[in-house]
Length: 236
Length: 236
DNA sequence: AAAAAAGCATGACAATCGTCATGTTTTTTT
DNA sequence: AAAAAAACATGACGATTGTCATGCTTTTTT
Image (cartoon, rainbow over all chains, first blue to last red; front, side, top):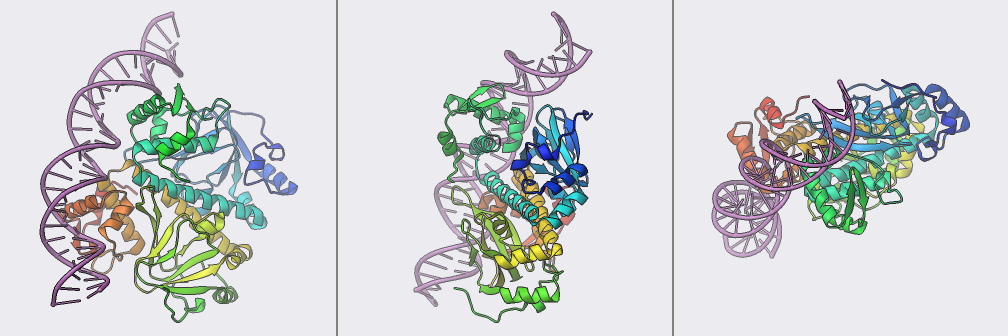
């Protein structure tokens, strides 16, 4: 399943600077490098599966992941995304619980390193900077998640979809033509918003008609971000 | 606003054993005690307000809190509850962000201690046990929050209400007559479930008719937990 | 104790939104 | 290249659920 390829070095990792590892010493980076493993994934491949145990954390060297839970009717609910430099799986490792979500790659040639538990614990214990960064990542994530709860509970589908587009923009940024830098199916969008695929299709058409966005296959161009923000009913 | 009263001692705190502080040394507890402040709150009083900064964490000595956000239409969304021994406000402190929720007391004579940032940071740095407990609390909370997202996005109101009753049972436990040990208004229940107050009233009546629960004012008696679990459509 | 306010309850109605059916387009497989 | 499968799109319809109106009950205030 997993391709063989030249393993990236932590020392030269492009993702390191914007990651939780950015303040490690040279020696720590070297040790991290020696302890890690790395795998290549095709689009749609499972990186880990909800309910399993993990014995380390995953660090994205290249590519994008979606993290999702399967609801009681078997429907996928996307909880969050992860991109280059992000870590995933830390929640389960640190709480000593099974993984609360599954992760699959969204692009070809997604490269993901695996850092064993022992090494993670060592960095937590021996590097206060790393420890505080980890606490910060967890805390920030918890805050984002709480916001999502309020939106899901209170906003109608139209507003949630608009907001989802804005969140995707903030997470993956726009290219020089204003396209959101991630390609998702209508069904995946529905699985973020918490609605039916048909509703997403209809609402995207409306947004297009209203010149808020432009559509070309799965590419979504944000033409009028202030208007989208108003549609999402967010003021912050 | 805040009543004066005899300040509880950390050394003799009944809530300590089940809290994040349970593994502190005698000396650390003594230092914690010297650094803290403590206040009494009446029912419904605000402990802290969403959007403000915090310079420490709150530890509940006695009583219960609800934590909630105000949505874009001004409606309250209850994110979680906290009870004796729980800490709140740590998310904002550790992420260095404003408080993401407000907290108000649910009972008379709620006693809440305040531990200044400096002392929290010291315990994190100097006591690995405390640090790992904190990481665990955050991670566990993040997992719970993700579950709530999936439920809000996918389950109908009826199932969400049943599940809310079960969560309240797990959080506050039942008394010897099977009553959930917390009293909430219909509106507050609606603000957990993410629905209208009228819907909660109607569904509670149905649950009562079906002998799943008994109602006496705000007291809710869980008569048939297996059936409630089925109604909630949970299998774990 | 009376008055006011808040909370609870129920019915009627309407809007949102999900489901189903069907058809087209695009992508993947053989 | 043909066939199959998946994704996208649109209409019709109905169920769920929110809103509004109204009245009763309980709690709080004066």
